[in-house]
Length: 563
Figure 1 (cartoon, rainbow, N blue to C red):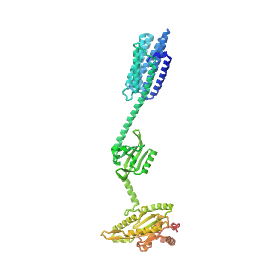
Figure 2 (tube, one colour; figure 1 turned 180 degrees about the vertical axis):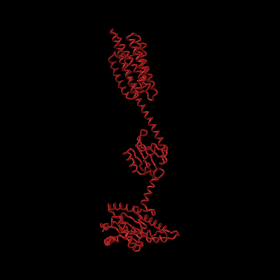
Figure 3 (tube, helix red, strand yellow; figure 1 turned 90 degrees about the vertical axis):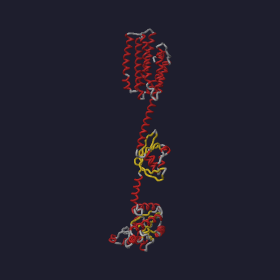
Figure 4 (cartoon, rainbow, N blue to C red; figure 1 turned 120 degrees about the vertical axis):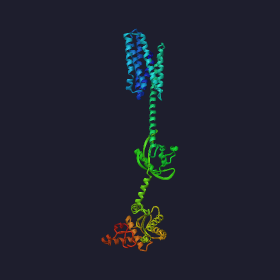
């Protein structure tokens, strides 16, 4: 800026030094941005050398007024202005190239060569061939060229979307170039131009930093937008239904075509839906969210869902993880319809626990489930009973009408039993024409009444043979209860013994296995030889086998607590 007048006034010098310090601090802050490091570093260095050159100019004037030699002062002054010009031209080159510090140095190499030639000219016209007019012109040419080229460098940044700092610095630079140009016509300015210029440059550096950050933010936003577009393309082209929902309020942000079809979403109203709206089981959703919160990612999690168009829930397999989407924390969920697989699993489970002919529970399921029910009833101190049901003269039905009609009899018997009993009662086909029932909360006297009602209901059932003949049948029922045992095998076998007694008593009747029966069988069991026990085995058809008992092989200790 070449304004030596600031050294004539103490307050002018102090204000200029303070403004220069502010300039250096703001420049240091702005230079932390990588692309501003080189140009601002060069520019601050140039201003510092310009300040030193003005100080040297003031010393030369003081020496001249004192009648001393000024050649050394003038040479030193011009060299400082020359170095300032070199750094300022380098700063301008860095603004133009926008390169790193190393690249900017090589881009400024011609400037340094020009500076070397200028240095030779300074020594030549101040020491070897003193020329006062040329020296005076050099004092103005060096800063004028510097600011003129710096203005060009700053103008090259006007095409940036955020350029407030460059525009301000450009305006200051142009004004300084004009002021220096006026000195060619012996028009000099006041001392306050220097601190004002430093202050405006400091402000422009801060704005440049802000502009750079805004450019980086805009670039990041563009990258995010590009990333989101790529995600959307991947999601839309995915063969699986995919939904992105905002984690904070569960609102759906994006759903591909397959998800829209699967969940019955209206495409134009996607943002009105919440992911939780489609969960048929709130506990299932809560467990999913807990897994995601703990692990941030969940793979192959089964969810039961529903849609607004149907009340029938269906199963989906989902994989979900947390992602950043459009500045939101979002849940990315991919789904696969596994309803058919779950149906197959249910079918296999049904086949494993159900009798294929009557659809009642099978023997294995009955025994396993009743064990659990007995434990529960004992803890709750509640009674329970077991019914053993057998179709009377079933072999005769098969022989007379054929096995097809016999199957009809068993199916109708099972259906009537299920309809006549409570939902919590367990009805199972135990084998052949024999059925077993577990009655929780029912004592032996109540169980007898239930059995009689069931027997009478079954006696009213009619099936028809292939030639349209009516086929009627009855059942005999044996009852055992918690008064006898808490062992499921023992309960079944004692109920079967009561059933055997009903058969012997004329059929189509109900018999109770009592504690007296229990004492008798314990006694008979102790008197029976091992060889006799070995020859006996349980069968289901008792119509022609009066001696066979399901109590064979039962350890008498099973009755110890109930005797």
